[in-house]
Length: 395
Image (cartoon, rainbow, N blue to C red; front, side, top):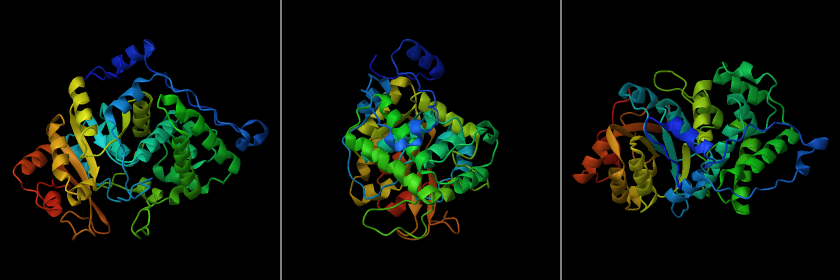
């Protein structure tokens, strides 16, 4: 068997068959969060395992294409408005199917609500794939939301973890803010991640492992104050920190971050453990990655329910590559309910009609079908055309 098989309506059964047949690596039980012998985590040597034959790794390799460069670290989102589409997604009944997204973990909020059968995180930067392997390691080694945050930031998890399952996100944020800094605990978290990240079947170079270590170090060093940064450009005053993103709400006043509710976290954790959240290196206007995802979905009888593009289309238009992107989108299996989720930053031209007061970014929603038809008719002559024509009302 040379690929994962996700048949519609038979996801769990397919998973059990594959696991029992021994064709996929078993999920790793959460590693004990303990200090190394002697209390010095820094003395522990991290031995990287030889990658096992893995259907997950083969699928990543099958779908990916050569990477490229973009001038941001993109460790967290800079879109304070990222949750503003959730109400409209609920009202339109966007659910199931396949989710495609870009960037780090803001897509987890969309995944938690849509509950897709499979999700693909695509980015031109290989670093983004490595960051999603890092997230996968955190999920598979965390028992609940607070455990995840403690491992992410190198904090000591409390003994009574289950008591936090019903806690609001504010309480979790407060715990992380108040938890003492412990160098030994931070190093223990680093060691655990470095030990576990190599068990997914992907061949990771020393450079890859160093990049994953740098990503983890950034979260540990900055904590909830971590912000999006660009290379060679000063950070914008309106960029949110990680705390802001976790506490954000949708337009109905409902908290929607993926760590806001335990059942949302557990859904994504299950997807990660069952290898149904797949990172891909690829250009949205490139010749292979999106086409390969589309072909794979056709094989599985699936369709795209939502495609989150952030503001990538702005750059594709500026570089004369939007037509290729639109053609790639058209080839994806989709229905009349399938949507594009995009972000618009008001500094590019002017405020969008759907901009919410106090927000520098604006989240937008459009059906894939309307995008395809407008493009066929030559209706997109500018980026402003793209973000204003056929945008669905969010409230």
